[in-house]
Image (cartoon, rainbow, N blue to C red; front, side, top):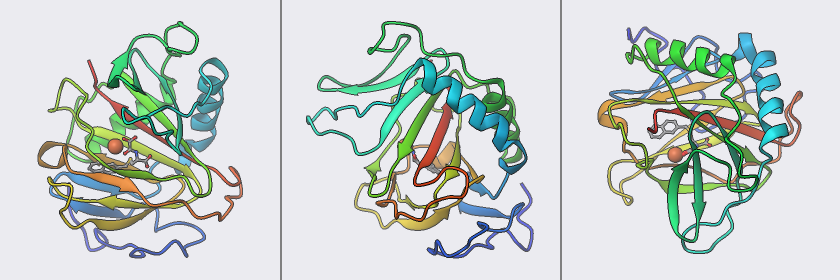
Length: 227
Ligand code: MD3
Ligand code: FE
């Protein structure tokens, strides 16, 4: 994608941007890792209806890590495959372990935005089959990890941020590599794949700065090709 004069325009490490970073700006985090500022803003109503529909059928829950710790982020899934963590490890399943039912269908607005974002970042033809939805409350965090449970490492991952801002940590290929910090605002969409697909990443504890629409919550959903 063209790296225009505003490719790196962002408020570095700061959440003091009431309207978020400039919509339309593109933050390049790595060779094949981008934040597309505000790309979701025109469709937030449809996305939030989709979120409500998913949560009605598959409520948010705090999963356990394989080490037995309760995650501070609550999560659920939609699409054919859903990500699960328990004392046995991480994996994708076709059914929700809480209900035994298939995961809710992926809302059309999620898949459409994911295809658009992937194409803008140089990954044409992305067809996600899994969507992991995370809900952060003040203090929730996600420690540094790699996303490596998906079968097809050639496919990118697309993430959509809604609600309160958060600081995203973007590390390297080793857990101890230094991490860049990037704020993620309501409506921002991140896409990463290729050489950046397996980089360590995480989210710092979220500060309580209520969002006008979502209040003291941050919703992030990630679209993946898991099967
Ligand atoms: C990874 N979610 O669900 S997505 C996850 O904000 C997850 O909830 C985070 O990590 C969240 O597994 C972060 C944003 C993101 C953006 C760019 C990346 C993750 C990335 C680039 C490389 C690797
Ligand atoms: Fe991740």
